[in-house]
Image (cartoon, rainbow, N blue to C red; front, side):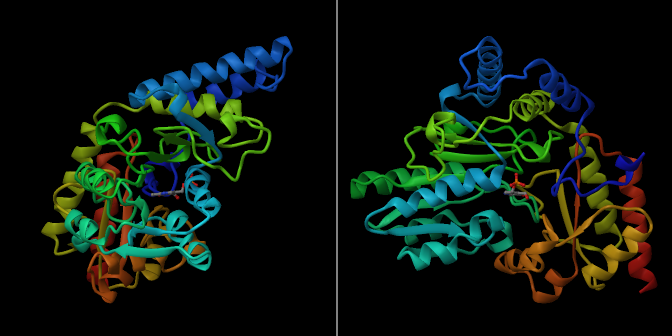
Length: 374
Ligand code: PLP
């Protein structure tokens, strides 16, 4: 089966049978538009709200705080584009290791007069003290992701939000704390309520749900959205709701185990194998997700990934959530303090619940062999 050789799960996962079944069943059973007044519309509307309730309850938040979108990229865009309404632009802080879906906003926001401070992340971690020093009276938004998609480092969001709240009361002005939680959802236990973030983004296809569906958490649903359209999702994200995909995404989330001891075991064994064979691991050895293992070798990553792909393995170089963002993962690794050489040789191996230890070790063997031959 292909999935045995598939180790690019941080880019996308293979849809699960139960998520696919839910998708198909919802397509066939709920044909109405959830906004329509007739019986079929009302039935679809009830199903939509049931999904929202189940989704929110798994995250321990209120259903009124969850908005379905077309993916994390759109969830992020809704939050960052809302800044464009501001009459007088202020200051934003974001980490340099954010996904392109966040970093790509820098140009436009600067053009519109926003000042942007970007924070490095030595060893993979944003330093809360550096964040504290960067906050000014003009700061309106802070964006720091929960789990980095290149190395799997887990950020200390709790401490950073506390700092932001302290500054808010000092300056008497609201600062929106946004966290892109794509690589954390269904993989790491966290409480949005306890962390006290104002907004968070999620994506279905990273947890064996379908592509093109995501969610946005908003502590207070009063964001000024540019995507109001027909007023669906309470005007946060207009457009007919993709009910089959929403139901399927919800199914995929509910199917994720609370803890992932199997993935942890696969990660540990694979990591150890690399270390014992002199392969440098870029992922940190603490505060890290067991779903993302980044290594580097002396072979340029395009060369090594090509050789592995030719043998049927699926891994990616650098970040490679998309090949359109060529070299972007390298930028993230350099922001973490890795050398240009380490960044150029980076390979990302990413796991999901269906990953198998024997295949992961076989992949590690294949990499070790190729590096020795080189
Ligand atoms: N944020 C992170 C950390 C990601 O890994 C991805 C995946 O590509 C995204 C955002 C974008 O998610 P989506 O594909 O749902 O737009």
